[in-house]
Picture 1 (cartoon, rainbow, N blue to C red):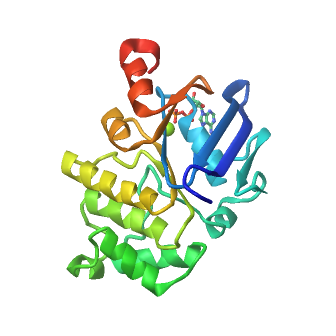
Picture 2: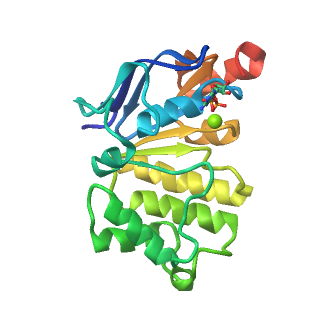
Length: 235
Ligand code: ADP
Ligand code: MG
């Protein structure tokens, strides 16, 4: 789809845990060529929404569509095949595999398994030097986050979902991450970022959605939305 057109859409998502309503009718569009951010206080429902999009949680009501196709009841691995990649808040790399092998596994799980895409992704994330041959175990957090992002990207996804990608990174690493994510969006990918770091969101996002108590309570470009948040209208 052209930039700005929704690729992944969620409509009227409801999730309950026992008697507790975690998502209370959430609508969300994730457009091509844009970085969409979801912010909000702890417990707002951000990760629950993320899991509904990734397929690791199924809503009681509502639907999730990829380019119009109903995915609501499709499991996570099927969504990965269809072009929805994700990263994990807790790093999920194979410790005994090398950096390049981890990225190759990602390529095989994705929608397109292409050795050239593996090499391109290693280069994009600065992992094409000697580090490519090192086992993932023991690498610093910043490098592991890049490995994990490369793993997600190597299958040439249409949509990339990121839960707190800046966690554990220093400011130079956050700036480098922002550059990579912006480049991916400029290339047409649809990105959704759930993030605590409001500076990163201000830097990165085209559209920000603010969640509170299981609902989206404000949406707009980061300038306006983050000003309102800083004035105390939100988290
Ligand atoms: P956020 O990511 O915005 O911090 P979450 O989506 O993780 O919020 O959680 C939203 C609410 O749902 C929280 O109150 C949390 O305790 C609750 N919750 C999340 N997952 C579960 C679960 N598996 N079982 C019960 N309650 C849950
Ligand atoms: Mg969370």
